[in-house]
Length: 638
Image 1 (cartoon, one colour):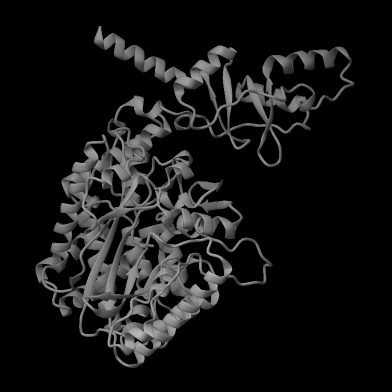
Image 2 (spheres, helix red, strand yellow):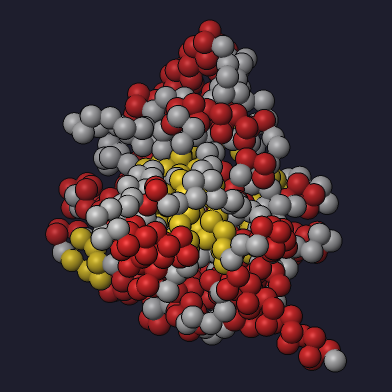
């Protein structure tokens, strides 16, 4: 997706030409593999860092393009949302002090982003999902204004009917719809690439698949989305569902998702993976590819395989096969896409070292892993790790069973240690980074577990928005210390950045746990709810959760009194007494505008709707904390 001239709306003839170029690239790659043209004997490591920009209230700060304008390109580049940025690190040989050099390089680059962001009152946050991100932050107006992102959104929207659905069940449940691919902007990852030779690719890729679950389990850092506690690594289902173009089908039809773990072990080469993807997953984007790979090969050159690279950039295996050219030499690599950002740079580098070492060690020790571990078990392990993190249990080789912690401490950490030392990585660095992983496992404190424990520590203090802002605020502050996340103390409300930032928009404090009635229900039920829950107004919604009216306490009492006077012969329906056109506001409404609106209309509460759907309610009681804190400040200043 690095090119700026790709399109989603190519005419059919040009899209067919792109498909032809893609198939030609596959044949050219087959030729290069067969004739031993792929670089071997070289082990490189590369990485990409995605990050959030947040304002002083710890909410998304859509100033990415402005910050980027103050930074050199490369290594800095855009991401899909205006509050995301990406850093592309220099590939380096996997040996000696490479991980320490990677850490130093990444710290230097992030400090450059911090300095540039400071001019816009913004900060850097390294998190898999930003807890304070709301649906209003994911509108198309906050998409980075580049053709490639617009094209991606158009292509995915066309294929999924412009309805992006999320349904994630964890400690809480999230079931929402969205209108763009901007849901992807809520996630940030740390991608790491490992270069391998053609001959060893099947062995190394299969090892990467086998160890994916335990590596993910110890790296989780994304437990919260839209205020809900979901999976330990909620990025996994969020990203998979955000770009799922399959739609509904017959229950007996198997359709391949665009983001996935995979379906089978690799048997012979990287080519079979590309061929499988092209056979099952339609191209999203294309361009007029002029490269003629066989002409280039015939002239002694090396083709970029442009069509294949464009296609592969929109197929999201969690361990993705990649082709590239470095210093004129063609190579293949495995790209790990499932590691989240954060909690700190040193945590991220430790995750990379553990992954690389476990792949290297596993490739040596597993033998024919396809004969020792059922592929379905490897895939199930990955889902279990995303759901439960270090609390997961795994099916392992020869049908053995392990807890995540035991598998890492007894098998994978020693294996990763051997793999890194065997590659020539400095012993001091191996001890440093794998020591962080071991400490994290021993004390059972991943980034996800720290966030959940901190929320529990805050209890019901403040608003939900304040508690989420405190998580981000503490993360931003502690990330600057460079101390690994497992050593962080639990945070409190004092990290929220001040109460004012958490009352800017209605969505930050509106009530979303609602009692509602349907318009054909009995008025007596409404009266029962009002009396039981001490509610003076109740929204009326239809079966699609669209607001169709409001009922207030006074109206209910009058009609019930009239019904009693008529000897209770009537059975009034809610539609008979409701206000069918109640005033509403949107979640993005500013607090000041909401207060003015309610004062003008002499209202005590307001339903909050989005595209007609009821999403919350705000009442005068919700403004009481604002008044209380303003009064406290006045008294303190007096």
